[in-house]
Image (cartoon, rainbow, N blue to C red):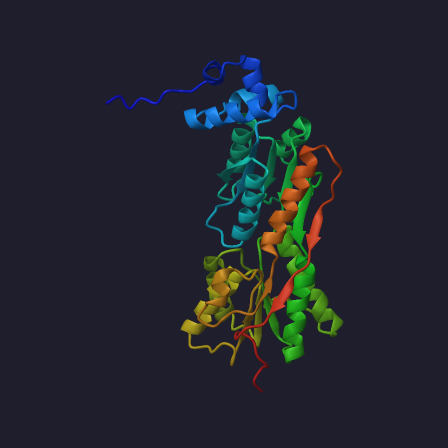
Length: 342
């Protein structure tokens, strides 16, 4: 048996239907100058014969590929899953395919990812940026020069400040979290900072400091530690805190992963959470609810961020004016916080 697939062409459908190639093409494009009965007959024949439109040829005709690129650190990152799902759903609904590309959080790989997607002639790009302290990045200048519709997923930094973005109110969410600890009666609240070059990390530190100062508590630099963004980073910071005998009744972390990494170390040292130490995170990833001690955290509207990003992209693709979006957060109180024991 010959298993070789036979490529059905539009002219084959036209011949079977007894119409011109032009008429068949118009029927497949739902052109108004083809009779309804003829259009229905041609489209039924196309379905029966297994015709698949040539997307590359359509792209050349329409000067659009119906392809979108999504650049992220890794799809395994639990913080971005909801946003990716919303963007994928929006792309599918609008008839677009979505290419994922992973930067592994390195600027060099980010540039390579973006260039490969541009080589595929994507119509637009969504980017979780690799944050750096430098005020400019050559690949973002390329996107500006090419006028590629681009939506930044997260806070903008100087190197990507000229693009539209969607973000959460990280300052407000962190402020709300610190207020929660203060209202429980905590005064010695340690803070585990995120990556120094990340605007979201700076905002969360700023929110923590603002809440303390409103209560006439000057932030103590001895209780502020550099961590990062992973569970390993949180664990290392916790070990440093134990080594320095940091005196605190509560610990606020830049995100849930850092909080859980630190909490694991304290729990393994016999420190009871929340009886001896309250621990809070930021993000409300799925794992936070099912942690050894369910984590008090701040919920980010991850899916709504993706919906907002897709809305901005569609407007950019249509050449319509659009605005960046900043979405609010919500405090989620679980078992990892309580009043300090006297």
